[in-house]
Length: 250
View (cartoon, helix red, strand yellow):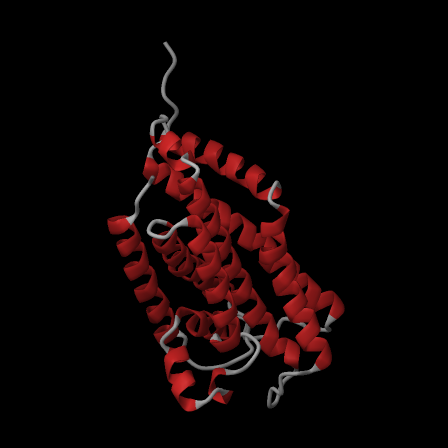
């Protein structure tokens, strides 16, 4: 008699399948990998951002990493999950030996793997093409923390929307949020350069918090990142909690 796979083996197998599926979706790879890289190179090269005491790449590299996390955790995961729900894929997976918590963990691990590749590509691009060099204030621990908390916050938001909206609506909403976070998330324009009412809203959003933490982690900005990390944790707790409570699997 064959034994059921352990949870760890089931998650590893499902993560491998999810990663293969990611490679078969070139449109997702464009949004998650190519767009953040283009933002980094284009805005750094044309010097649109005036950063006092620094170069554009010092400001834009953390912002581009934040954009990559948003693209993968919110846009790609949310749209994929919404269409899987619409096509009945999630319902069929729910009847398999793979439990729903194991499926969720596998999808989040897939997102993290893609994001590690994104970070490596963006840092490599900054090093080789834009003359960026790691400053003495770089903190790998803070960088890892921002990656995990940012992923949880935006993945929670993506799953919350994907579990309640129709797939076509989710497609539009996810792309609209992506553009909104690009504009007011401190990614290409410092939040303090925005009009005061917009800046006040931006400071309460996870995109600006993630950008701030990443700039501190990469040594582009000084100060204490505790408040921004706490805001990301609150967003993650709320969105994941709401997603778990309201998600419809079919």
